[in-house]
Image (cartoon, rainbow, N blue to C red; front, side):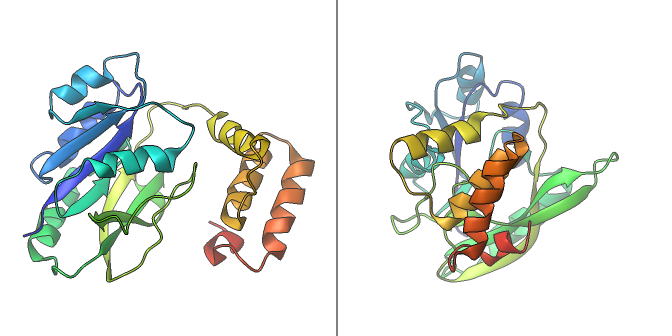
Length: 231
């Protein structure tokens, strides 16, 4: 049976972290928690679950921080979660069964990601994300924001779902700020980032610039077709 390292990056998540870690306790073989500058009880809470708690300076780059967490992993596969994610109790048995039966030549397991819910808590929107990734240097995150590991190798699709159960508004300006800093540093946004940058501009009611950015994205021959068709 393969082993799994849960790899997380966190900051000021005292309200959510225990719920997340409790949801996968006993299913993963180690927990790696990389803290990027918490000023609340996040580190204290994490330390109650694992000795593998590390401090790492935040560089306005989610891929960089996630790769740091992966670099600490010692198990066969790395699994990522955000602090406000949870594996529902109804998913635990399926999670364990998949772990027990996973073919050893599997490189990546895609799982559903529930990100929107109705008033009764039932998922209304979900999509597949890379969730278990073979622990090797070939698989690393890219993208300062909306970071991804491009699927490749032998990929398994599973109906097991992680639920993104946000408990607060977060920082609505964070992603736009990261994109602004990237552009100010002279970085050219690749098509996928043009798409997300355009969305951030739209959310911030900067409509004229949003239209310009999104039109460039749509006219590009590159970029993910899923983004061009809507998500």
